[in-house]
Image (cartoon, rainbow, N blue to C red):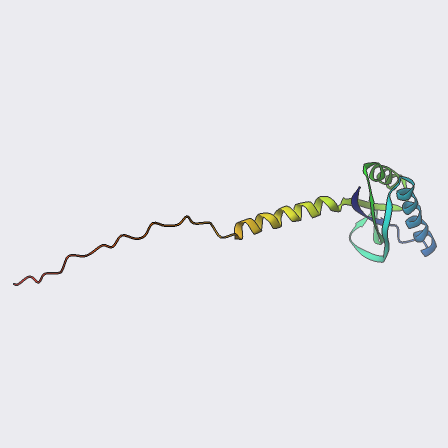
Length: 135
């Protein structure tokens, strides 16, 4: 099972009860597909960076869950159908964690000191004595 999070943007004209019902509906979808919800967090109403269908505000809800591909497929399908959901995104956090671990390992590998083989003892060299030229 992988760790996912989904961010749901819903229409601002909905009441608090309707917003809570939407979060409960998608939590039930996840649990119905044998996934487990770790956290459901309502972020509240925010101003959008750009209007969506002439709407400038939206209510954000973040749901963190674990599950497999079936959970994600069904959740995505239901979110696309819902008229009250303006936008949504589902992110696989395991993939992001693995990428971060790879980048950290690569950076750590670059920081390792290079192993230098033992050098042979230096050979002493002598210089010829300088001679003065008489003019």
